[in-house]
Length: 223
Ligand code: HEM
Ligand code: HEM
Image (cartoon, rainbow, N blue to C red; front, side, top):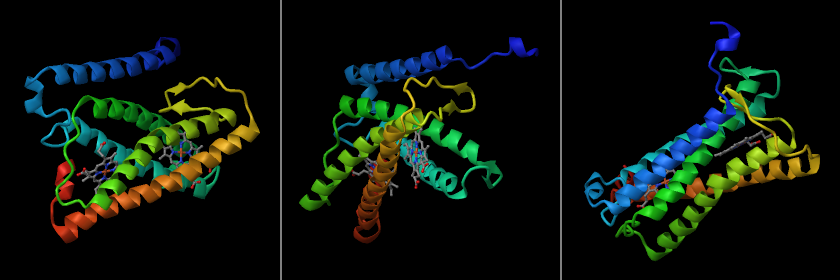
């Protein structure tokens, strides 16, 4: 096919896809909230447990965050003009930025989803201190789901590095280059990444302690 006739993934198409995705998910959630038939599908959270959508979003974000930590570590360790496992540094950066922005999209849907249903009651085996701990950690998670991608995006905007979204679209750079702000955003990104990692370790530690030692099946609440 001649170059000029190829279908390109344009900014307008991308924006349309994002808006369509947001609008469809919001309307599905709204429909289910107002439609008793949906309760049996257990799409949303309810008094009887976490909904399918929460579980899907939870494990999607776990996978995305794991990829971000592994990829982020590899790309900053191997340095520029290098490669690891057959993937060059630039591609690691492009995928890191693209998946990070995808995680932001998931985070928005997750917030909407959490507002729509009723949160299930606490697991009966949790102590009061554990409930307080979980509550704080969840606040850190929801904060981090936005701070991580936004600080990363600000870093590459103020650094004028740009974002090539999934190799398909060079995103606009609306912010002027500013080395001072770039460095603040970079350290916010790295610092928040470490805080998030501590929260993840605490969260996973608590779940596994219950699952393995107390044998109360806490993990099953999210499966
Ligand atoms: C869920 C979202 C994200 C997570 C969990 C995440 C996590 C990380 C981690 C763990 C590192 C390695 C830090 C280090 O040890 O030096 C890193 C580096 C980096 N991230 Fe992200 N990131 C996310 C989103 C983004 C986004 C959306 C962008 C840009 C659009 C971005 C741009 C960068 C850049 C450029 C670096 C390299 C920093 C350096 O030069 O040291 N990140 N990120
Ligand atoms: C990136 C890592 C993770 C993040 C950001 C995260 C976030 C969350 C959040 C925010 C909740 C509350 C429910 C909601 O609003 O969605 C939750 C619940 C839960 N998570 Fe994770 N999680 C992570 C990793 C894991 C892992 C690796 C496991 C398994 C070992 C796990 C097991 C659970 C379980 C069992 C619950 C339900 C707890 C309850 O009974 O209320 N999470 N997680």
